[in-house]
Amino acid sequence: MLAALLNGQPIDSNLPIIHMNDRGWQYGDGVFETMLLKASRVRFWQDHVQRLQEGCERLRMPPPSQTVFQQELALLIGKQTDGVVKFILTRGRGGRGYRPDPATTPTRVWQLFPALSPQPAAIALRCCDTRLSRNSLLAGIKHLNRLEQVLAQAEWDDTSIAEGLLLDTEGELVCGTMSNLFLVLDGVLVTPDLRYSGVRGVMRKNVLQLASTLNMVTEERAVWPQELTVAQEVFITNALRGIKPVVALRSGSEIEQQWGVGEITAALLTAVDSVQPRS
Amino acid sequence: MLAALLNGQPIDSNLPIIHMNDRGWQYGDGVFETMLLKASRVRFWQDHVQRLQEGCERLRMPPPSQTVFQQELALLIGKQTDGVVKFILTRGRGGRGYRPDPATTPTRVWQLFPALSPQPAAIALRCCDTRLSRNSLLAGIKHLNRLEQVLAQAEWDDTSIAEGLLLDTEGELVCGTMSNLFLVLDGVLVTPDLRYSGVRGVMRKNVLQLASTLNMVTEERAVWPQELTVAQEVFITNALRGIKPVVALRSGSEIEQQWGVGEITAALLTAVDSVQPRS
Image (cartoon, rainbow over all chains, first blue to last red; front, side, top):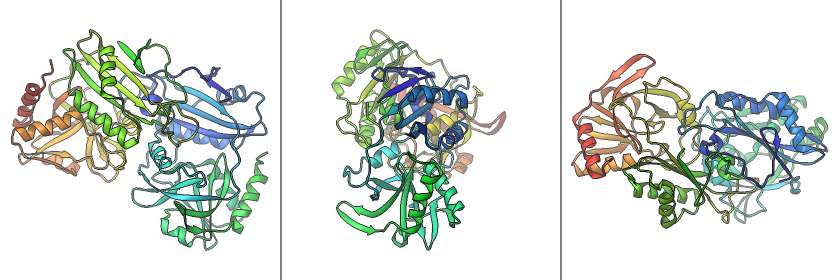
């Protein structure tokens, strides 16, 4: 870790800073954002701010003011030009018991990490056994209850598989453990609608907007795993890695399916860089 | 808070002790137990130990050794005779990313709180709008992903309503926000089977065992809310409050339904105190 802030104050990242009564620690009662710092700016900043606000509304927590948020970011990154910025907001310190006290002051923690090591231009996926639960109350926002993602990632450690796909408990195909999923089906760009689970990724939102600008036909709807077998193109998105074309679905060392990097994926890769450059 | 321990060491409970990279804080990646200290002993100690171990197995975390667990409890409570003991075990400090590292050392935190203030002998419930998600991977254990319980308890603040009932997303009646539910239906003691959500309470387990000893007929099965309307007796259980007869289901100030304290509830109340006294 390169730097950290607690409630606006720079802190030694080796020291413990969280109180055991913090509701983030006790219940996962909070939200977070993970952002790409590139050439001294946070990519898709306004989209991160907006999702954070939506998460706060859903959990009935006061969001940080945009001014505070922006000032703290500037203090965190200082002269660092590239890296990964993580922001966690919890409901703050409480007493024993689940009931939130509206008077509680939220806890804000910023962390700055070095830039990610490069990933291949196209990647392989697997399908996880861990299922996502369905709850529209929590779907879409980036809250701190992440045990399903932890269990899913514990399923494999082969570094040549970049991501695991997740179905929900009813068998719908929803997302990756840390990414959103797009399929091209008969020329239509399809992505799961996330009405019951998954996180509405910032890159997902930008890809949908760009696709519309490029006059592509898009659909947000329920997606089922068998649609992978007929997809012409597959890619995943996240705020740190951007758009990642998927060239293989693997099960262990066995390749179950392969795709090329198609025209729609290539057009979106070009477009997303021109709208808000990565460097 | 009366006392606290971090990894076996007594600590000042006013100081921050948790690292921001602790996976409990980052992802709710851990389990907890809340126990009743009465007359210098923890009630149903072995049942708490067993559920903690089950939780660790499910999350693939190493459980603390029983010796360590017992020694730390003794150190925590000292000469205190009565109170509430909370134990949190997280996967420990990690790097960025969901994937757990099997080499991580778990974080153990004990907290000792004063004894609960008394509650009426019989209580009123309400029904929450917040729904529980269904996921057999996480059902039954007392993990740290508790946002659904937080949102449910945020729904009301009328202290004359002691607990809120929770349905799951398919409409099954599962439990309270911090308790298990029992109904008496035509002389049969029925409790939700918790196959998809809810926590397998230690008091629930003891009630089922006692009922069997008393030759009561018991059923663990899916329960639906309309069964409340035909139940002859209703009670809830938790490790701190024991068995609590329910005498009313309320919606705001309106009473939707009422029950008396029936024979089966009364027999179990007597039996549970004789098996492992509360004081």
